[in-house]
Amino acid sequence: MTNVTKGRPLSPHLQIYKPIPTMVMSIVHRITGGALYFGTVLVAWWLIATAMGEDYFNWVNWFFGTWIGKVILVGYTWALFHHMVGGFRHFAWDTGYGYEKHFATKVAKASLVVSLALTVLVWAIGYLVR
Image 1 (cartoon, rainbow, N blue to C red):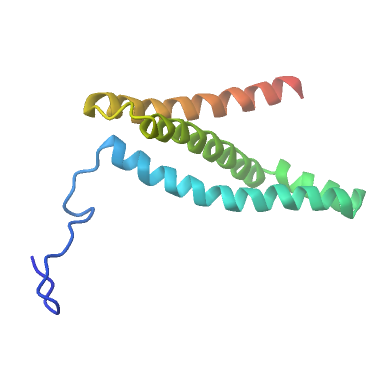
Image 2 (image 1 turned 45 degrees about the horizontal axis):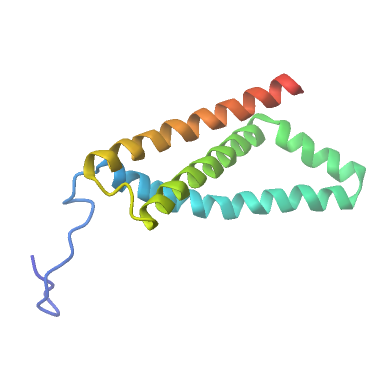
C-alpha cells in the first residue's frame, strides 16, 4: 500500500498488527499517564475544598463517597499503580534488562496483575481502617 499523494508506503497500524501484551501495556501506560493528569485535578480540588470551608469540604467528600466518586477514585488508584509498575518496567529497560521477548511478555502480563492486586489491597486496607 502506498501513499497516493507522496508515493511513499504507509506505516502499518493496529489494523495490521496483532495486539500483543507488550504493545497493549505500552498503550495502557500512555493512557494511564494521561488519566493521572485528570486525577491530579481531583486531588487539587479536594485540597482546595479544605481551604474553602467545612461546608464545601463536606460536599466534595460526599461526592467522592457516591458510587460515581468511588469508581473515579478506584480508577485513579489503578491508573497510579499501573503507571508506577509500568515505570519500573521502563526503568529496567533503561538499564538494559528485560528485552527478551518471552520475559517482556511475562512482565507485561504481570504488570496488569500487580497493578490490579495493589489497587484491591489499598482499597481493602482503606475499608478495614475506616
